[in-house]
Amino acid sequence: MKRSILFTKTSKTTPKDETSFNAQTLIRAGFIDKVGAGIYTFLPLGLKVLNKISNIIREEMNAVGGQEVLMPALTPKSVWEATDRWANFDALFKLTGSDSKEYALGATHEEIVTPLAQRFCTSYKNLPFAVYQIQTKFRNEKRAKAGLIRGREFLMKDLYSFHVSQEDLDSYYEKVKEAYFKIYSRLGLGDITHITYASGGAFSKYSHEFQTVTDAGEDLIYVCKKCKVAINKEIIEEQKNCPECGCNELEEKRAVEVGNIFKLGTKFSKPFNFNYLDKDGKTQDIIMGCYGIGPSRILGTIVEVYNDQKGIIWPKDVAPFNIHLISFKQNEEAEKIYKELISAGFEVLYDDRDEASLGEKLNDADLIGCTYRLIVSQKNVDLNQVEFKERSKDNSEMIKRSDLLQFLKEYVS
RNA sequence: CGGGGUGUGGCCCAGUUGGCUAGGGCGUCUGGUUUGGGACCAGAAGAUCGUGGGUUCGAGUCCCGCCACCCCGACCA
Image 1 (cartoon, rainbow, N blue to C red):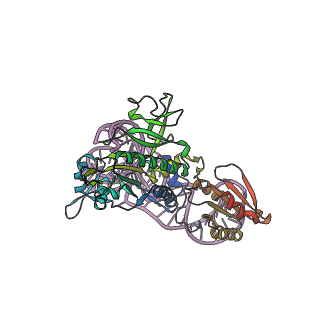
Image 2 (image 1 turned 135 degrees about the vertical axis):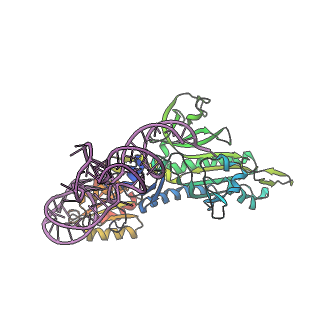
Image 3 (image 1 turned 90 degrees about the horizontal axis):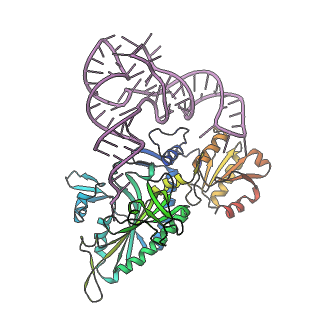
């Protein structure tokens, strides 16, 4: 992508109606645009990152046998009444159609996926199975805040699994747990993301959350110094030591909830009379699990975690572009390198603007935060070299022009 | 939903006890000079002062309602 035709711009000033670091920075760098409280547009740069996050999640969901679907955001009142959540789920956005029928904007999809699964699953032969989607969710938060971390509309991956028994759910649950660890590690958040024991809400005694440690977090967790498992604040009173290793050296930290997995049991299969016939032809309960993770919240969390005074420092696999290429008084050679990199399969943001000073281009590159940066200047062209720098490091190095592609192939990809 | 705060060109702000054609910076456009960390000069465009009502000879400024946004709290399957 050439910077000269990218339709967004960076800004020197931060919007005053936004105080969270992630939203301020993402708006300034041209990744998102604010439409209302907790409502954002994803711009080309932001959408690229969001899609990369989603794709990592998608790959890991596919790897545990999840089958991707896309359920509606507009959901009829009747399904919510079946589970008694029309009246009791106060974050539901409700609306009325012109036919005076009532709807809710999907805040979660148990009410949709359960009847869906019921249509196709009647026998033990059909079990187990899991479906997921990556979709916009709506929650009428009393107060949206913290930029992308608590919006009223946000992207969510929700996986639902269906089982013949509690044992089968338990073993699948462990598989998904492992998949989640892989996801956070691929997103660059592995070392600072803890699995925590959290309230099970209406479904069970405990659920598990995945919490990424950052001061921007809304939650307090208590991390076991030995095994890195943590406990959420809401259950610290009843669970005073580590549930895994029993030790009581717990350290309080602020964190963002970046995932939550639940054993639903029969909480949703029962209200919909969703059963199956076992080998003996006897009717049995379907046991369910659900597993959520929010790509847009993760995007905001990454910005909160990986930054310096100049801007964002994207982890390699989620950066909007692999390489930020800057031309300085030398557009001919830079253009040539741009084309070479593109045909070699790199994603490149090429700042080809004549009117921008080098300082402006460098500041933009630091703000946008692509992992690697190349500078092609007249001086470098004369010396047959290109300047290479990692966003996370202080020093740059010179790469021989003739070695450039090979170097990048080894180093960047 | 309770408490507090803020609304002035695209963005950040100034605007005195109410007073004349509402200012500045950033950005944008034109021309010229520049270029290793957000360049400079000259010119230009761009504003229902959140919105509705009221007080007044006169309202960005005072009063009332509403709306939006931010912060603290509550809430957060």
